[in-house]
Image (cartoon, rainbow, N blue to C red; front, side):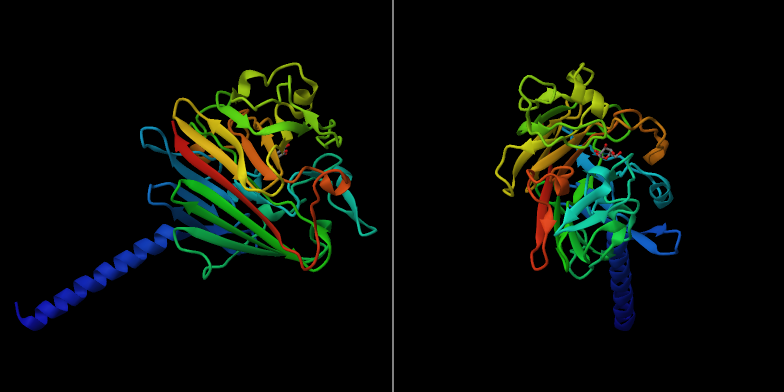
Amino acid sequence: MKTSTLFTTTLLILALLFTSCTRQESTMTKQSFGKTPDGTEVFLYTLRNKDGMEARITNYGGIVVSLLVKDRAGKLADVVLGFDSLASYIKDTPYFGALVGRYGNRIGKGEFQLAGVKYTLAKNNGANHLHGGLKGFDKVVWSVDEKASVPGESLVLTYLSRDGEEGYPGNLAVRVVYSVTNDNALRIDYSASTDKVTVVNLTHHSYFNLAGAGSSAILDHELFIDAGRFTPVDSGLIPTGELKSVVGTPMDFTAQTAIGARINENYEQLQKGGGYDHNWVLNKPLASMELAARVYEKSSGRTMEVLTSEPGLQFYSGNFLNGTHVGKGGVKYQHRYGFCLETQHFPDSPNKPGFPTTVLEPGKTYSSTTIYRFSTK
Ligand code: GLA
């Protein structure tokens, strides 16, 4: 072969290698997830760590669409409930994998007062307001800060919630960073600032099933919650204001217990929630980043630890799932096929002066971190 031909061939091979690498890189980290009804294209971003743990997240609603985690034999499975298509998320979702705001959980009668002004929100949950209203942060298209994101490692989402959106005061600039870390965690860092006094309570709404999404009910999962008290609710799931001891009740998860062990007990709070759907008052000091809960699933060996800077944890046992949602791979999600551990400030805090405050003032920064960390046993 002539030197010039050899040179050209080498160049060609190098060019091919380069394009295939970059192509692989881009398909690995970002792909189209379709368009919203108004024609906005949204994307699916893949984050993956050295160990193969992988999250796929869309900027529609900041939804974690899938989360692959190893079992004790090293086999990956998707441990969160969700849909295969954007259309299904748009049509009807019980907040699968979503970012929830401006106020996660309920606000009684959809009303509160701030600095002498009364604000009225949508009543989208019976007489009450739930998860930010009719079009909460779970249903908006977030901007992706590609410069600040690290391809394959972290995804930075931003959203400007306008003054008056869903009835809330103040332009609220929100930033959420999702990361998949090398210690097998999905980490979520939230921050926000406002130009008018407002309330903020951001959370994440993945439904987990550590045996694999769609495989079974979560009743055998064993749960530990580091909380000696919870906030009892009325029939609309609005806290009464009391912080009640868990001692001697089916709400006591201070010793690791199967979710299903006491779920059908004749206990008034369980009847009100149709199972577990309550806020636990974490023992840890307010705002410190500590372990809040741990879940263990025997058959796979998977363990999930939840660490948070938040004072509360909503443990929801998937009571409203009833087989009507057809999830990934065409599987119907039956009653209690997933559970949520939503780190948060307490529900209805804007109307409960005794609860830790959710008020955000101009010039101050809201910040909150939650880590879902996986291992096996
Ligand atoms: C939260 C609520 C539940 C339910 C789910 C979504 O966890 O506390 O009552 O509304 O969201 O279905």
